[in-house]
Length: 205
Image 1 (cartoon, rainbow, N blue to C red):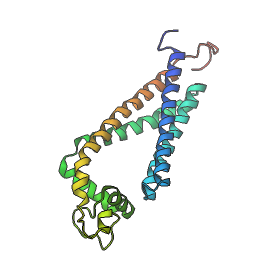
Image 2 (image 1 turned 60 degrees about the vertical axis):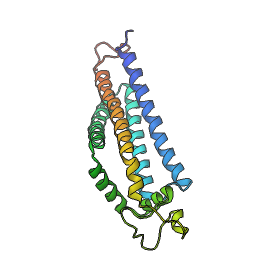
Image 3 (image 1 turned 180 degrees about the horizontal axis):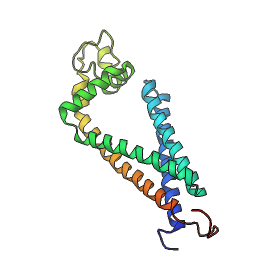
Image 4 (image 1 turned 180 degrees about the vertical axis):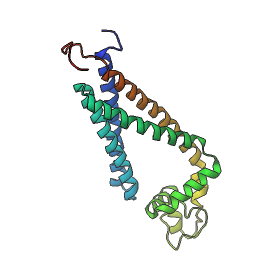
């Protein structure tokens, strides 16, 4: 059978959703590994990453079941959900790529002020204290703070050195991944409208 037929489209859709399953399991494993070894102490960050992994796993599971059974309803909901995810992810990726230095700094400061656990993680990892000033309220997780003979740098100075590269990488990866999602929507739409050659010729699609 030529590529683009029923079997080929089914196999392509199954392969794409197996890839999504692997990515979702990787996200969950990385979040659990970071929490287990104390690299990330913020429960909120871990919960968000695990939540994204579980959501992606469920979407991929629906797509995989729909592809294996040629189930019209499952494939329809899979298309709708995947298309909405594509719109959100494409928008966020473009925003990451378009942010200038001033916008990056404002975004980082907002994120910094939202979670004390994240502040401790950053201070410990980057060996710095405070975001844009040295007012640590008498506490800081950095090694330099424990050493009275060593002065601590502001975290904003260190974060900004890597923020641009990180946002560019995240935006690029997100943009690339979003195109796989629109590919999944196209494959699911095509697959829904292809007649199963093994079924009754007079049966509904």
